[in-house]
Length: 323
Length: 254
Image 1: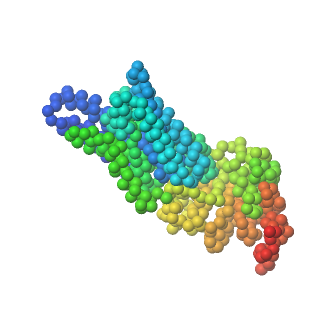
Image 2: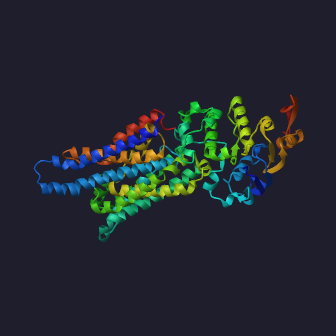
């Protein structure tokens, strides 16, 4: 049995690891030759710090939301990417990026997160209604997610058709997901919203534990499952919407990190949620670190997570870990 | 410090129709009836988990539906007929997450009586139906453990012996009878007439959302009431002053 002490110790270790990788990403600037102190300071504050903060915010938002969504939707396969929440956010973001008139471009730092939140909220609502109606039919929720993703891709295809060349290039790179695209203003708007939603979800860890056994058992244990689920879904949609606004759509992270943490540390959400936040942040910081080491390229993060996540998901399915 | 329960003219759209009864003395009350008779609906209303369209349910002098869910949860526990857990929770996690503080140690008596020592490390997804049922009964009892000790708990179980082997059925029913003797109200549904006949102090007979009869087991369980309830003829056998009801083959109303 995994004791409480081991669980807490593991969360502590993950926190230390996060700090180490965070410092490593910042310290990258010191390894670059032929730069003056002033240039290094500029790179640190204008490139490396936003990059590290983006990785931490997006990684923790996706993993905490993924872990919460899995319990609320009673579906271990739920992931903001797979069930269409990130696609909804991407669609509204694409609409803003392509259709926004030039005179409104200055408002992007807050209109983009808000648009993503609206898109994420709409997809979350559709998925929640479906999962409530199709209780126990895991595949139906996943299929609904695929339907939403396909529909949003189709609408984005139509948008591409009418976009100019520059908007198309911006959108293509944004959709691939990058940790380098966030500027300070978007971080300033989205950061507090992500931190607030994640803290809210973390504060609901006990309620999520009750929800494991179904609505009736949760009601009998004294909590209102519908009310709790709605608040948690709202917070998840906000976190995912802001994460998509900052870094585009990133696949698999929100599915696999909570899944493997549950296998290793048990199912207690008081441990799984903070561990997911720390682990998700560390994973994206590692991607940022590796990306920085490559001399001529900036790695699109969703490409990396999909390359690693796809085979891991197939392996988990083959092992029968998702029932 | 037992809690009397009064069900007063309760109706629930399409499932219960003007049901009234009261359970004044603590004891084991068994609800019998054919499929679709409204047993599960009545248990959910009685537990405060489904609000009736008319009527009221009183625990003592308190109207259940004027209380909050958290206020009820310290006094009443409920075991559903079906269990669905999509995650690989272990038996221990099932108990831990549903205990009031989510960190409680599991009382030894609970582990022994429900024979769950070997199930604490086992994931629920790999448990048999009976093993899962024992874990679910344990988690419900753990939820109101302090009230059980004080003899003031209301324990509502929807077909608790379903899936259990004979030995576990008897051990469970004997223990529930012992808990009732210290003041707890045990209300359960069941399809085994002989379990009801052996262990219940009171029997309620339900048919098509209505109460056919209720009262002491020895009065209510008779051949004519069983025929009315189940549309099936029984024979009553006597052995060591104990009655046993056996359905007669080929003598049903169909």
